[in-house]
Amino acid sequence: MKVGTRVIAGAYAVVMRLRNQVLLLQVVVIVVSLAAGFGVVISTSDDRFRDEYGQRALAIARTVATDTDVREAVASSGGTSLDPGELRARPLQLQALAVAERTDALFVVIANDRGIRLAHPDPAELALPLSTDPTRALAGQEDLATDRGTLGQSVRAKVPIYAPGGTEVVGLVSVGISTEEIADDLRGDIRTLVLIALSALLVGVVGSALLARRWRRLTLGLEPDQLAELVREQEAVLHSMGEGVVAIDPNGVVRVINDKARILLGVTAQTGSPIDAIGLTPRVLEVARTPVDVPRSATVDDRVVLVSSRRVSRDGKDLGMVLSILDRTDVEDLTRQVDSIRSMTDALRAQRHESANRMHVVAGLLRQGNAVAGLDYLDEVMGTGPYGTELPGLENLTEPHLRAFLEAKAAAARERGVTLTLGDQTFLDGSLRDPVVVTTVVGNLIDNAIEAASGRAIEAASGRALEAASGRAEALVEVELIADDATLLVTVADSGPGIAFTDPDSVFVEGVTSHDDPAVPGGRGMGLALARQLARRTGGDLIVGDPGGETAAADNTLGGAVFVARLPGIVATGHPA
Image 1 (cartoon, rainbow, N blue to C red):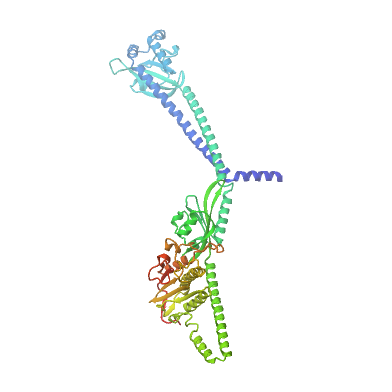
Image 2: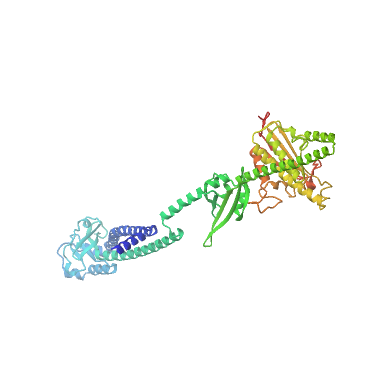
């Protein structure tokens, strides 16, 4: 009993598969359609055949009725007392038989104006009254009907015969075609229709089976409920991932984009849009077009992301591209914080060394009994406190964030053999509305300048680039900050070799750098790009004022690159609290 139940359940499951249901539905539709069409054709065929044969009988009767010999013979055979033997031998009888044979009619009967047969296929019926009503034909009207006579049921046409040269009705011609002939033709048509219907059914079943097979191949053998569940799981997984995912078909149309990707890329376009039209940055768009296994860094608004892409194929068929996006903004923020901490640590270490050295000098002078020299030295040291000659011009900045930041950067620069100075026009009397933006922009510019200047100094000191350094081995970085109402103007110049790229503006493109570092995820070359985006977000800009090097302007005293940033609305006028 259990085995039978399992067999029935298995058979029911097979039948209930959607592709089998579709196959059965299509077969049923085909059968019903053919049956309906078949019924309509059959129901109308009998009437159509009767009408066709009636018109054929009418045409034969008209031809006989208009024959001159027939009209003369009928006109001369009036009355009711006629000799059957004489009628049998007349040409009219022979002519009627010949017409019936040629036209395959059941009968051709000729009668006079009294309804007495003058010609009939059965000689025994000659000189007898017609078996059907001749009234309409003898009244001068054509009569077409299906009736039963002495020769059986037939479709018959009665046509009046007029006297030669006159309008008087002298008789009639009755031509009949057997309904059996109509039935034979109808059966032949039905056989033909049945064959056509069976052929159509066979073609429909084969087509439905092929369609079901293709459906199974396209859906990988999954049923609709399985596909629906798969889609729900896919949506749940995609939108719960911490990684952004964008699926692009072979035609470059976005088919899937999860919530994280929309946030990281700033995309609001709906799926179904071309990848070129959803608002990606040039660097992200380049990765979306060309497979990139190693993640690349890119900036999107104030975010730094890692993007990679790979091509997807199945069974040798290209299914498109998948773009992966990771948020690196927090890592960049932590990196900047670590750099700041490192700079402060370096600054404290440098100050500790300097303080120790000064204490050694004072101790030595006192041991030698040279108290006056010791006091003079202490006076000099007291006059060069943390905001004194160590960074001349720092007193022109009342903003605490920049004062601490620049002092730390100056100490870090000294550790690398670079002298950081402030420009003569440096002045900022107020507070910053967004210190993070300012320190990020200024910090990136100073870090790049220190790196360029320190590298040039090392080359000059080693003697490999004395001529290129124009005899200048000292490494210098000059920073100038000017507040113009609420706008902060930042200029950073260095004594480095300048920008080596043909197009100086290319240094702002993500990933463009002269210092490759495989240890950095996504590569270097993000600082200047991020700094420019932050500057532009405030309504300002960051540009190359002078590429330096061999193309340095005459007023470029340091000879290296000069960067200029304009940050509108960043300064809050008035003294900081």
